[in-house]
Length: 534
Image (cartoon, one colour):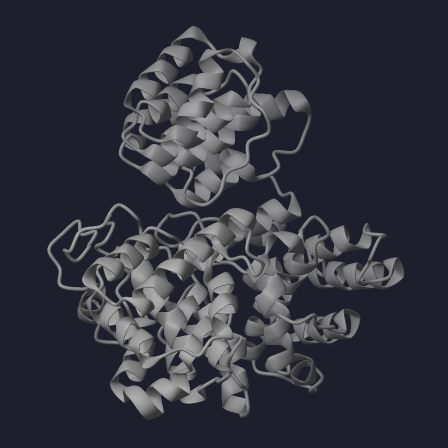
């Protein structure tokens, strides 16, 4: 666009993103998770979208985008008119800055950057109505240097860069600006870590220094208290919190034991062999390779478990450790534990779990004093293969939206012969279909049923019809994926009619492609989709 008017991309009446974010910081100093007004249809995802697109090495197409921005920026510096500024803004706000951040930084880093560029960054930071323009401002401030901004340009701008980063759409960019500036201002970063909950906190934790026992204890207890799940953070927490040294003590308090359990289980997930670290570009770029002495760590942890793992709740942790050790024990290539060490640790878990007969206690405490299912007891019974299915299905029929009952009926191993397993599944689906009207306004339940039925071709037709004809895009998308995985002769006529109805209402091109493959009666290729596809 080449007009002389300032370009904005507004969907509602607001002055700037900066003012909007400041107005949505709550009394505790946290951003209130409101969707940003430049696109109210995009949910607030705590930085997940940019984390998913993060690339330390710029791909060819993105390199072209970076080059275009670079040339438009040079054109504005050479001829700083409103027209050249608008041309630059239009390109910036329509480009995901995370995809060109390092390429642009590389192109600009060797050049002498004038304060005209910093004035532009300041202007867009405070007045822009589009998130990518604000992210671009972080890039410029990082290249010039955050210390330089604070000391020689504007301390207010420096402070406001950290304030804005409490909204986790921008925290990653603040952290990358710190890296470009080669500074890690601990006071500001610690405050930010305590006022973020998603990818913002996860990345900020990598820049913090843990100098005092109080800081290390905070990291151990809070480092994984996130709205995102990122196992690669766990070895950093183990090292920086000095967890191995803590566990070597003769006794530890229960709160430290419970925090250690959470971090260790997450670390065991991080070590699982089916995980591909190449898919996690943030991990590769920002986390150094760390060696954790796993056998000794687990030996010390299980020693403390002798004191604290005496209840079903705490024994669920030991089950989780055992499950992951069994996977690691079978790994030969690049094994992190020898087979003998893994088996000894598994044996220790078994001795903790099976030190008594748990069935009487499970049956007597399956329901709490209010008559509700006790979730921890249900999970514990499932791990021990104690059959509570008759009690749970009866409760579910009376409480058809109960999450604990649904999780057990969908995912717990039914046990017994194949005929009994099939009979129980059919009884469960009959109950679910009888309560279908209660599910029509609950998106999460519809999505869960659609996902569950993927493995049972030809079953649960009324539930899938409800998903496909619902008002919820995620439910439609999950039902489409599940049905598309079925053999085509297992898709009944009435379900195909629901697919056609979904196609008529669908606005998502990815979902449309999956729905069309069902109608065409062709087997779709392997489905790969990213955050935001459905």
